[in-house]
Amino acid sequence: MRELLDGARAGVEGWVARVRRTTPGPLLVRVALFVLAQLGLLLAWPIELWAGPGFAAFVAAALLPALLPRGPMPTAYLLVAVTGWVISTTVLSVPPEFLGLVLLACSLYLVHTLAALAAVLPYDSVVAPAVLLRWVGRAGWVLLGTGVLAVFVVVVPTYLGGRTYLVASLLGLAVMAATVAYLARLVRRR
Image (cartoon, rainbow, N blue to C red; front, side, top):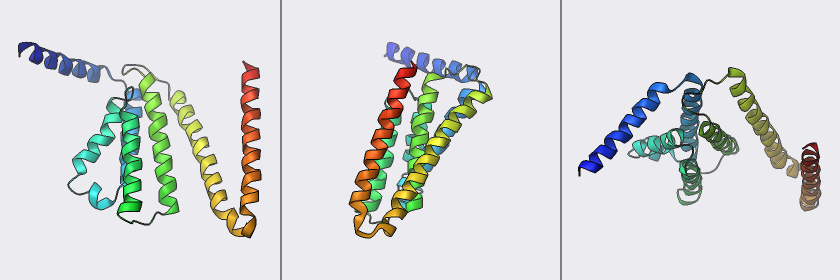
């Protein structure tokens, strides 16, 4: 019993020491990770469940990736959010909205990328603001491209009529060829 208490005390003292050494850069990344994780859960699950008796569980589900970004917690969070969206739309028959789905996808991507950043940033590292801005800028470009592509995929089929399969096949082939060309270019640059 004594060893168990000593182990628990050492764990708590380790967390306290880590919190004391935390600098603003990694703290900002983890706070943003928590806020975006909460937003993702709010968008994925029905508000009745989120704001009701399960509130503490949802806060814990959003807090764990921010506290433990190196382990399986970010993946577990993403699974909880996606499961919530599936339950919300299929079991509870909440009609999915395009804007809500796009915002959910954006928040899940940002949780994923911020968890990756938080995993490599030590708590006591000094991070220049330009580094964080570049990271968020790259993520913003990815989200912008994805949003434009999503709107394109939703709007264009209404103008094509019955030729959507042909156009989708040709467009998919073009995107695949462009991706292969881009990756080949990256390999040659090394």
